[in-house]
Length: 198
Image 1 (cartoon, rainbow, N blue to C red):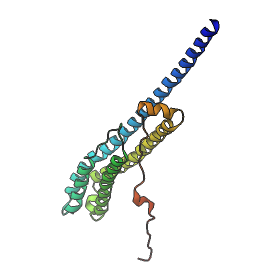
Image 2: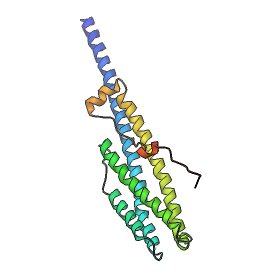
Image 3: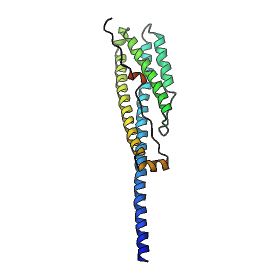
Image 4: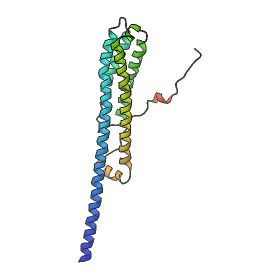
């Protein structure tokens, strides 16, 4: 009788220890998942700041006499396209993230072309309003870069936890899956050609 009670106590202790580890592991996964969501929301917030600034930038540039309308139209079109792809942080797929990156990259490219074109308009380049907007845009681009890096760090920490044994078993049971982070643009792999002969 005593050995039967002792066996039951041992089984109960083992179940309590495993249950405690399971709860702790589950709560850790939830914490990491929420960290990824928060980091993604920060990324979107920075892109929204840039999105909002584009209207002011375009309005300021439109005031310049004879400014190239095609360049402005490209910026406006890219801004519109960038706002069309939204991603639910609980379902970040590689395809959705690639589309998001592509649209944001098009807006970045259009803004870069706009700033290059402005170089030909010294009276516009010298206005205080434009200089402030250009400075704000540079700050936002740096903030976007930092937010993307923080998001990738959060995704990495989460993925390590989800894929590590024995947590991967618990993650599979509760439906926690690896997430995708930002990757470099494909063109970033190519070294730029520099030609000093011209």
